[in-house]
Image: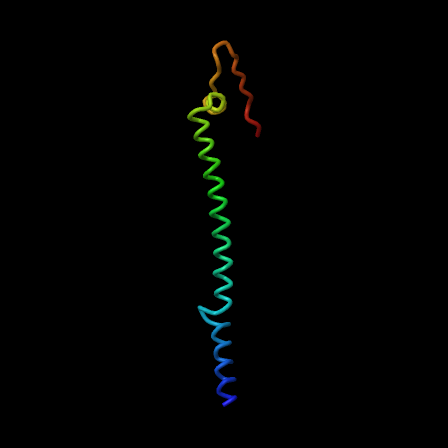
Length: 88
């Protein structure tokens, strides 16, 4: 009787530590879930920053002016626009 219980216990332990549903697979799945959670958090932070930037571009005159100056090379009337050569 002891041999049967010991054999069953060994089979149970072996099935827990090997195969697609064993402990190593569970640990890998947990690590993947943590990595995905970190990626989601980073994407949410980036999304919030982009929303804030979009809101500023819609309503903040200073942000609109800064973008117009930087990307479009615009200047106010009477200002002199000086461009420097791109460094190589």
